[in-house]
Length: 148
Image (cartoon, rainbow, N blue to C red; front, top):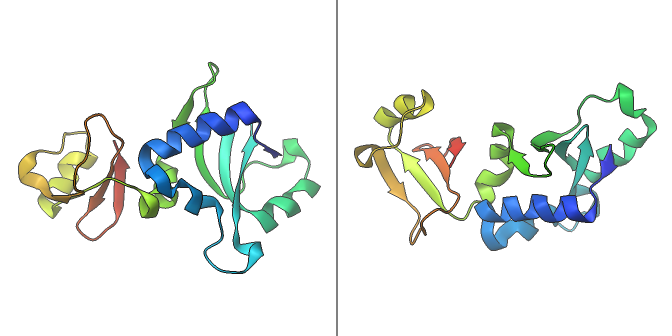
């Protein structure tokens, strides 16, 4: 695992800022005064992982071909240099998401099977969501379902 380069970091943060807005800095800063609690982004085989810094430091003793993954996989870089978020990133970005849509129980399964969220299935949504903005879709019990 290695730290991200400047261009990779810019691409990653641009994509994450699309969903989190100004609360992007809270992903990296520790929530408490304990400095060992902060997280970092590391890359391994074009996949980006969100890892606690103490674990990332310990992983340097493992050879790169032997290390498969560590932490939460946020996404991957394509061959053209774009960044794609994975579904596993929901646990990381959902608490910090700026715009959210809550779906009623009767609309969860049609959405999870590939259908659209119709207006009758929307329980509530964040205020003033602009057009073409990244949102996180949650169930009424605040369980993240997908991002859109």
